[in-house]
Amino acid sequence: MRRYGKHTDEDDIRSRPNRKGNRPRTNIRPKHEDALEGMVLTVDRGRLTCLVGDRIITAMKARELGRKAAVVGDRVGIVGDLSGDKDTLARIVRIEKRSSVLRRTADDDDPFERVVVANADRLAIVTALADPEPRPRLIDRCLVAAYDGGLEPLLVLTKSDLASPDELLEMYGALGVPYVVTTRDEFVDGRAAERVREHLVGRTTAFVGHSGVGKTTLVNALVPDEMRRSTGHVNAVTGRGRHTTTSALALPLADEKGGWVIDTPGVRSFGLHHVDPSRVINAFPDLVPGTEGCPRACSHDEPDCALDDWVAEGHADPARLYSLRRLLATRERREGD
Image 1: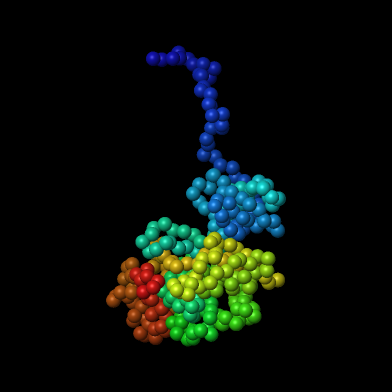
Image 2: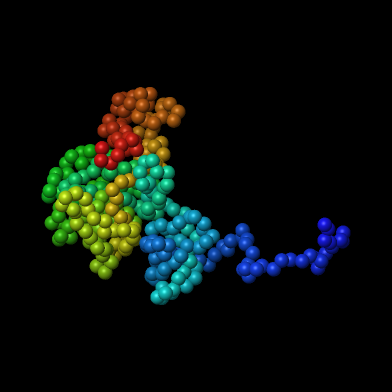
């Protein structure tokens, strides 16, 4: 039934009142051009601790960001109460473009990708030579994640007074990864921290490693005393460390030249479901020219791969090709294999 005549105007149209009393939804989002830039230091149950200038503030993610989550190391735009006073809360309205990302999945069959750290320059892979035993497959996986995410790796071998580092150093020598070898005594007197610090000054470095390898102990020696985290011990029965770091945390490097260290929770697995194997070759620039003769979609680990002839002709070290293929195979092997 027609309610209005042929010639209606706006005064003839009745509009329904908004019963909820709120504003109608719109797709237009505020630009927040006045937002100040901050750095995410840690995330805890939806609350983000951020550094804005010289102030530590607590913030929530704005609804307009949708499912996009901010992680430790992110540069973000923040509005609201930026005083840093107790019980104040600001709002993150923008996440800036990331220069690098460290990603992992729960395992190789898990399609859910988790960004652990953003905008780090370097990934320090901390591994004990004994107590607990080293896990080369886990190291390989961390290296693949570093190369894929745009981070430079650093290998830190601890407890060399309990076992020799020679086998691991020989295994990774062809990769050209810088390394630091330390003893338990050097952890106590600070020499270990000083040698590692040389690789960190002026950079943002994420630390990863199996529980019980001394990762958090090392981080504590690198940051101001008042910012140290609790540490645990290795279980004498299982040989596994206790997880004392439950969330990633960015801390300033105790050095006048600046720098940041990011302590991450101890890992027992490092899934690589998110990694496209074709990108791993980019970490081997000396081998890239040899791939020009490869068949389309070559995995670089098959009979027709052109890299075999390229290396045989003397263009690159055979150990480099072996290292590439070992890393490419990490998605086919479990860390404990």
